[in-house]
Amino acid sequence: MKQEVLERFCSKYAITANDAAHLLERMTLVSYPRGSFLVREGECNSHFYIIASGIWRGSFVNDDGTDQSLWFASAGEAVFSIWGYAGRRKSLITIEAMSDSELYAISRTELEEWFSSSVQAANFGRILFERQFLDLETWLISTAVPRAKERYLRLLEDNPELLLYVPLKYIASYLWITPQSLSRIRAELAGRQED
Image 1 (spheres, rainbow, N blue to C red):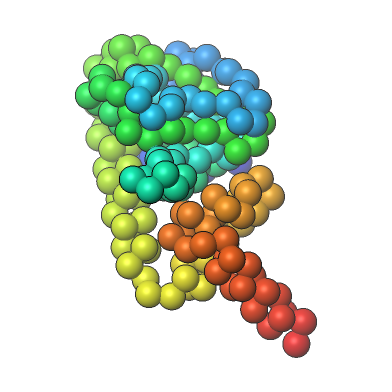
Image 2 (cartoon, one colour):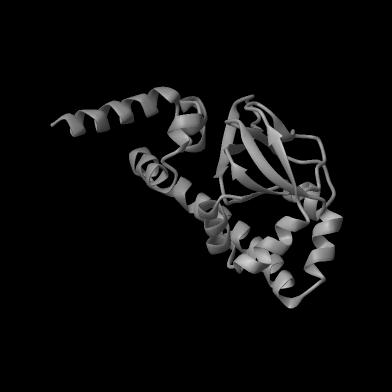
């Protein structure tokens, strides 16, 4: 794993580089082309992944048939189906590669064994799930921000690489706006930069 990716992972999940190395020793590096799925809505996948490279998207199809983006994840972040991992149930979301990617993979059983191996590993497991809840609440609050332009600017600040790999229709759905509204926001911001 590249040093910058390892540092991002360690920083986000409060794990030491040494503990991360022990975890990575137990994991397998797997390549996925753009458009691959870790899990589709209605399937079960209890594996845990760390993104070495690439961008992933979590989404679901709502009642009116619209594909709704929930989150994006990139290098140094963990990605998994909480339904498959924690509940061994069918996923309510689809996890799709937005770009060619490499992920480190480990089964739930192997990860649980590692969690049991030391206090540091167990703490990582706790922090991992705390981080997932924090990210979820941050996303929920961000959808309550009244102005779509503010949500878009925050997304650009937090994840500028998304524009390189993620189709704008998925970014629009993540922001809970139409692609046309996103185009207007982008045009307005581009006009400001020209002034």
